[in-house]
Image (cartoon, rainbow, N blue to C red; front, side, top):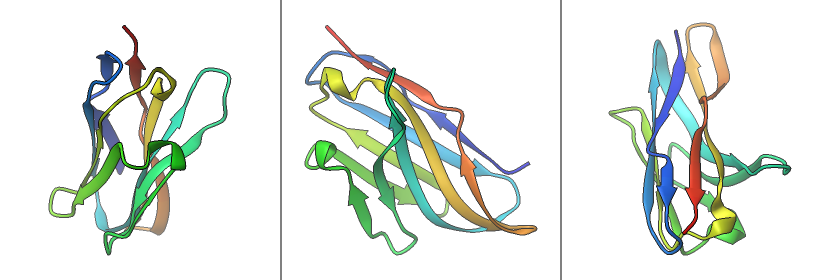
Amino acid sequence: QVQLVESGGGLVQPGGSLRLSCAASGSIFSIYVMGWYRQAPGKQRELVAAITSGENTNYADSVKGRFTISRDNAKKTVYLQMHSLKPEDTAVYYCNAVVNGIGGNRELWGQGTLVTVSS
């Protein structure tokens, strides 16, 4: 079964840091784009950051300079290092990947991990 499994969410105070991880597993030949999205209560899901297989990155304006996305291709894992967290960063964070495996290309979503920024 091809899937993404996230970890690293939790409660953090404003100004704090967290690192999210997302590992892909299953019969995957290659991973193209990996990224993180988030959805706050009552809001639409939005792109936070993405990274290509060539390690080109893209960030939402709201997180530029505070969040860093990276990937370890050998481990099929993407990370999101978050610093200077704000209450408005509170959301469920979802991992996303476009992979090539048995049956061709497909898009995967993780189950989501909750990040709460509060004092």
